Length: 298
Image (cartoon, rainbow, N blue to C red; front, side, top):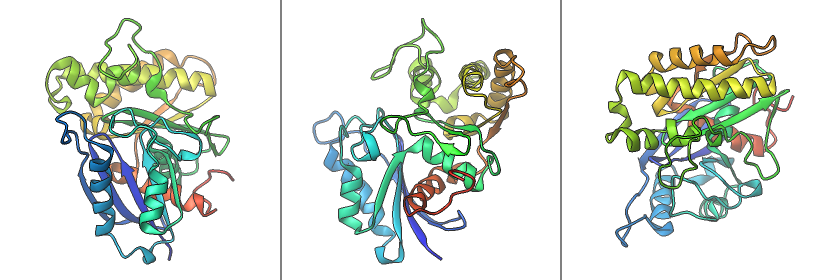
């Protein structure tokens, strides 16, 4: 059975794992994403690269893998060749795929981490058998991937689905490197911490409810726009906040989804749980080899 070397690049941590053709994560390693470099400010591209390649080496030898699939925060250039994650300022137009391919010798494909999650959830998660849905990550940042008519939407440059950049509070806050009032500027772990002055995991009941409401408002608007009836939400903030978050999101979405075709929108936790990002990255890799991943592209 073929294995994919799966790589997940996030603002809080980097993770690597082995994913088999059944969508099962068989091994994983992770480390915090470097924040501070030798300049005392942002971790350098070389610092980030060093941590990532060190993790990748722990899963060697590479000849056991057929492909390397990567989920990374965006934006990125067409085809995922150059990445500029908003939550990793040390990488701007960084050739991530080229670096990994040179280091491992494996064919390598990079895609947005939330689009990768959408693939994984449709493959072995909460969206199995669905041909129209949005998958979201509410974590250090907020991202999304959209499957419509059984196809993952890419857009002109591969950045389709960035629900985190929807404005949900026009007079809202503007944390560093964020657009004022967007969902990411209001509901991401980084932005919640910016607003409340402590880690997002210490959020009050009111903060959790507000976050769920903002996510529900955005998801409801997307459902109205694209004729969707399912939203799958994962990420450390959403899953960490748990049922109070999901209850608030469902309640708010119901206020937005009053059209015949969007009424009854389901909002569900990610079925892949905390393994979702790596399973999704594995799906990116297998898709690159031409394998069928769930119903996507049928």
